[in-house]
Length: 101
Image 1 (tube, rainbow, N blue to C red):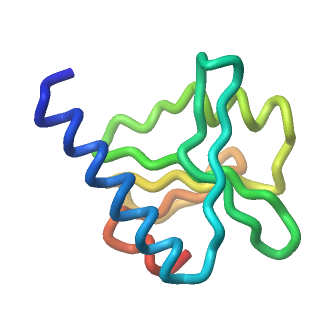
Image 2 (image 1 turned 120 degrees about the vertical axis):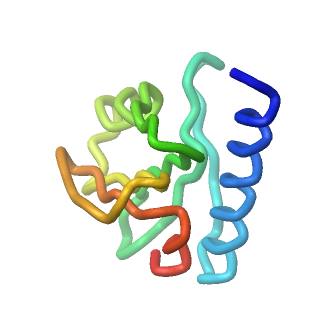
C-alpha cells in the first residue's frame, strides 16, 4: 500500500464519520483480538449495524465477514467507490452518498 492509498483511506473514514455523526448516529468501533476491525457500528431501528468504509473499488472486507459470522446483524453497510447495491446482506453505499444513511 502506497502512502497516498493509506491517506485516501483515512480521509474516506473521516468523511464517513462526519456524515454519520451529522445524521445523528453515535459511532462505535469493534475489533476482534486485535486482528480484524469494523470501522463503525451504528444503531438503527434497534439493530446494531456494522459499517465498513473502503476508499476504492477493492471492497473485500475480512473484518466485516468475521463480524457478520459472529453476531449475525440484520444487515451490514459497505461504503466504497462502488455504486448502490444489496448482496449477501450487505448494503453498498457510494462514498459520495454517505449522507443518505
